[in-house]
Length: 264
Image 1: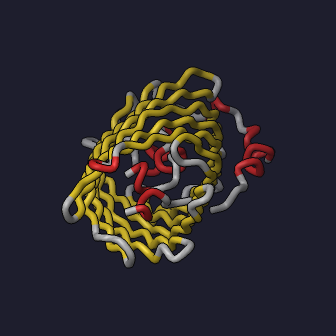
Image 2 (image 1 turned 120 degrees about the vertical axis):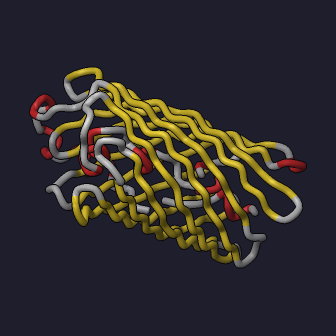
């Protein structure tokens, strides 16, 4: 199960988004909620070539406040419980982010603490810190990057890129590539795809599902992860499409740490 410790994240270009004049967009040129949030429930099944297969159930929540002039503060928390033959593990995480959002995108910083209980093997914890950015070139696509490091019982770095395409305003498909390096333990490369559909703009429940292929270095083999879940969006704006909730609400996965075993 060591492979689940290392998952998701490639692309180091956060600084490129932060430096581009795209971020000169007028923050007050669009309406945004004073508060936005999500509540999410997820089930994941992992089939590994070198380790026992696992089942994970998780819950998480995010909430963010608009401070004015495009500035936002966000808090997030989550808990996951994983079963595998003969044992189990669980983890919880607590963190936050600060970012600036304009018409053409957003960029910010994130800090997150994760504690993993490995049943009979004890527990381990790590704190990650990094930066992220998203670019909104039009109504059809969103491009994202993230990168940073982590320290504690596990040390290393991570980076990731993603592209979200909106088939129509309430249906999104996201593809991502990620890389995570653990000092003295090797690395993991991930390719992922996820679809999300907002069932109702009035009662904003969404369904999502996806797949992640993970390649573990140093003979760690591969892992195939399938996940499904439901998400509830809430804010002070009332009716909104999925694309509006993605861009005008919480930062979602682009602001999270990479390894799936620590964050899902």
